[in-house]
Image 1 (cartoon, one colour):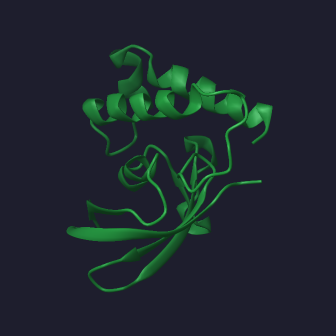
Image 2 (cartoon, one colour):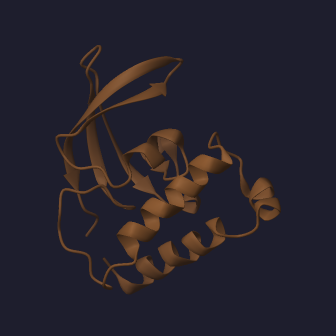
Amino acid sequence: MSADFLADIRRFMSSLGDSPKELISFRPLALRPVEIANLLDKLQGIYDMPATLPETDIILIGSNVRLINMLDYYEMSFQVTLPQDSDPAQGKITVLSPLGSKLLGRHKGETFNIFYGNRMNRFRIISVEQKP
């Protein structure tokens, strides 16, 4: 993970810590203020480590993730990104999306529930690859 990428993540984290009035204008997303606070806590827990993160199966910003929907066995793949790099049509979802924020900090093999696509879904993380 490059120093520039970590600097971008730390700038993003500081923007989440801004005053609530500033966040409202920044918030073109489905996350409520309490969910943004929880996301900031997760980010601080992950990225307040040493400058080089170990290669793990933990989902970080930049991770390529493959999930399987346990209800219909549909597989999906995408990369969790910072908001400015998000492009759902290219398989890049922002960490500020409900799915992106739910995934952050989870590990390969974990199963979780989320309201996604107008229904409650149960997903299992089947692979996690870190961005080079």
